[in-house]
Image 1 (cartoon, helix red, strand yellow):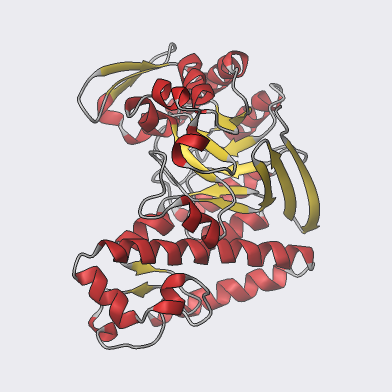
Image 2 (spheres, rainbow, N blue to C red):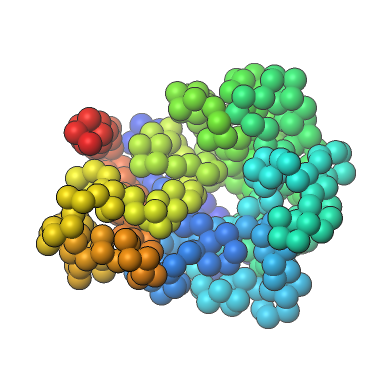
Length: 372
């Protein structure tokens, strides 16, 4: 397992703190992974990621396969060296693109046949090919290829996806020869019986970690929250639990309460580039005219470069002027907010105060949202 291991070190209810060991260092969980889809977290350097508090990053098999090609990355020493990141890396399998690029693909038992969104060229991504790509990238955690149906899919479609996901997981596990480990992905949509079946079948494969997939794909928020709570209980307690593609701060807090350990999402970085910033006093839309001459820091409680060096008025000016610096500073801030949030949850769990902390955080969030 190349130095891989997980141990729980503290808990409060179902929420827990742990240590995830990899060949490229340890991760204190619960942890949020910034998304570096193409081998880069948009607008920031790896040194800046470290200063934000990032411990582990996510990159994407589909995109790196198409450009520059996994062979290129492998030839230069793997993704860690290629992107100058010496910490752990998790790579997505390409399964989510099966969902998000529906118009460009066709799924059958062999794999996914798709057209490149770059040049229209034809490709076949099989479980074996996905694992080959991730092995060449040298990721610490590889994800098995799965089928992710849309949130409103009929039960018959979801059931077929669950069955295929199990078969593909077995093929992925058997094919993987990379330096890290491979995690399974539980599917099942909003159908509890299918979630139970998927989790049971994947547990039989004895994988070193398990992800909750197929959420935040168009289903109502309350369905997503209930699905996460239900599915987390089905996963083995001695393995890390990873919630894929979620989410907003409220989602993270509720999922940690359900016992989830790892998260990724583009929300903090994408919102940053759009001028939507998370602060301890609520969301700030930096485009608004009220910040035109506002000399206060974005968030007086935040230690990041954007908050300690610049005013709201200046950040607004940068954004409206189309300055690249706006994306950089906003991204640094939003990532710092997310990392600080995860650190606060870890501390509350260790101090056996997570339930109280959670209620207070959610109450403040609701109050801020009402006043917007």
